[in-house]
Image 1 (cartoon, one colour):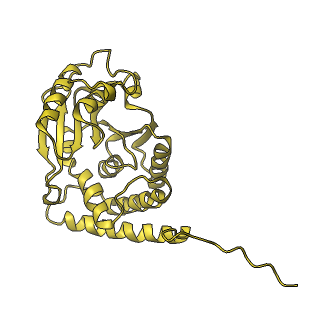
Image 2 (tube, rainbow, N blue to C red):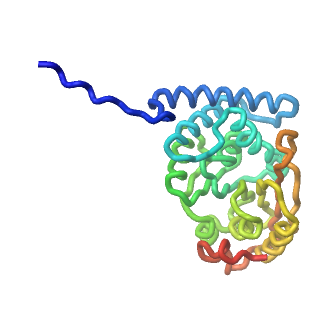
Image 3 (cartoon, helix red, strand yellow):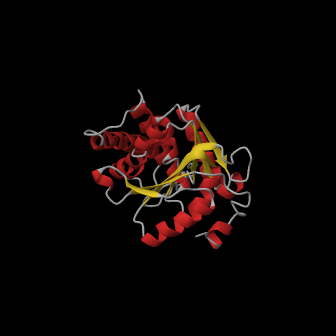
Amino acid sequence: MREPAATPIIRGKTERPLEEHFFLSSTDARAARAALEALLADNAPPLPDGFGTSVERYVELLLDANQRLNLTRIVEPAAVARLHLLDALMALSWIDAWRPRRAVDLGSGGGVPGIVLAIARPDVAWTLVDSVGKKAAAMDGFVTALDLPNVAVVSARAEEIGRDPVHREAYDLVTARALATLPVLAEYALPLAAVGGHLLAWKGRLAGDEIDAGSRAGSALGGGSPAVEPAGHPSLAEHWFVIVPKVRPTTPGYPRRPGEPTRRPLG
C-alpha cells in the first residue's frame, strides 16, 4: 500500500517560514544598527556602554513581532535607523538638560520612542502607555527580553491614567510621538506632568493655527507657552519638537472622560 501523500504546505507570496522571519529580523536589525551608527558618526549624543547591542536586539524583537501584530509600517533598515532610532535619540539633549527622574511615554505602540530612550537613559524610570492591549503586551515582552528594570508598561487610555492618583502629576517628563493634534495632546499629557516638568512632543509639519490652539488648550491645563524646536539632525529636517512646560497644577475637571478630548478639543 502506498503511503498517503503529505499535506502540502501552501504559503502566500509574501509569507515565509517562522525561522526565516527570525533570520530576516536579525539581519535587518544589524543593518539598522550600522545605519544608525553612520547617522551618528559626526554628532553622537552620550550613550551608555552596550547601547548598540541593546538597540539592535530591540529592533530584532520589534521586526519579528511586527510580522504578527503590525506594530510599525517602517521596516526597511535605513528607515528604521533614521525614523525610529535617530528620531528618538534627538530628544536626549532636552532630557539631559531637564534630568527627569520619572517619565511617561503616551501611545508607545511598538516602543518608539520610549524603549529607545529607556535604553539610552537607564537612570530614568519610564512608564510606557498604550491603550491597545496587544501592543502593550508586546512591549512588555520586549522589556523582559531586554532586561530593562527601569521600564513599566501600562495598558490604558491617557484620559484614564490622567485621573489616577498613582499617575496624575507624577512625572517630570511626558513624551508623545505623532499621537494627536496639540490641543488633544495637551489634555492627554499635561495632567500627568508635575509642576516644573515638561511635555515633549514629536511633530511633523505644524500649521500656525495648531500651535495657537495648542497654546490656548495648554494654558487651560496648567501649561506655559509652547516652544517649537527643530529635531536637530540634517536627515530629520521636517521633524520638530514641541515643548510645553508645566507651570501650575491642572484643575480637577481634566482630563475629561475618554474620547471627549478628541470629540471636543480645547483651544
